[in-house]
Length: 366
Ligand SMILES: Cc1ncc(COP(=O)(O)O)c(C=O)c1O
Image 1 (tube, rainbow, N blue to C red):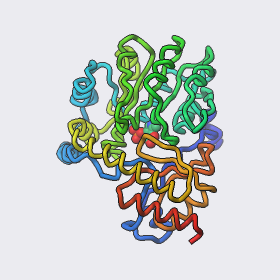
Image 2: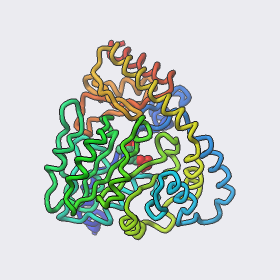
Image 3: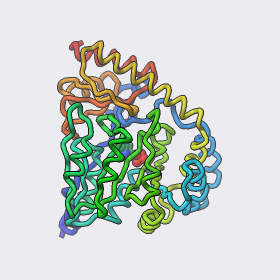
Image 4: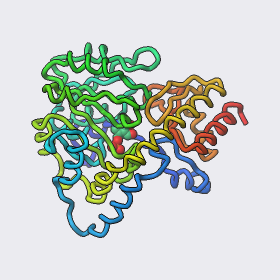
């Protein structure tokens, strides 16, 4: 018997996540100098890692021979203080992606359903399929806005999870506090809202869902250190929710699911308010720069609120390939059902200039 024949049902048809292309890979493939390549493909922080986080990671490396504190006490204590919640309301994940999977372990199995938007972050669908559950995808509203009443309408007795990101990826649009309150208030008691807040730190006034958690509404919020804190490579994120839900999630994670270097970096990064504020300011300026540039090129775009912009370029794959040959990596979103669009991460001022210039050249056929 072959390994394929022995594999569990669904494994061979499980779609595979396609990440943004690393700089080294593109350099190798096209024979380019890696130093001349810019990557605006994975919504990483163009300003590097949080300096406090980096220093803490370097210190923690000295103890790399020891297992981590598997309870992640220091990080959960810092988070509890920052959020005004109990330490027992936080679970730490190997990136927030791992937390999506832990939720699948706890709540999904064949016969269950997950509700999400079409063109939502692909990992929601991947997690549903991985556990044999059915992903139910709801169309976006006009302007690629997320349609929360439509999410509610798609809930059935088999639904267990509703996945929602705000700002959404790849569309970039955020929902208002009022829209979120209406959704949460109308959720039936057998459904948990997974509120993905990966980009929430880029908002000026992010909606605060803690009061809903305190009232006993079924909501878990997921955050990451991969974006505004600039620690994507370390793979660390967290979730906050009712302590009863967190206790169940703690049962399905590996004992040392996050390494000590990442945990130390994340703990220190939470104190890097200055860095975060600077990145948020730079991101606002970068969003404006890109959007003005797209306007000047006559291109339609979605006024995003995260650290990326969705721009309509015609044939997304062709433009993506042409930009790559110029050493500019962007993200085609054909796999999200948006073949005419590209997703561009907000870079530094110079990187944004280079993207706009290259894109202008490609579209003019130069
Ligand atoms: C909406 C959304 N959620 C979660 C993640 C994953 O973040 P992490 O790096 O913490 O796994 C991403 C990463 O791009 C994202 O866009």
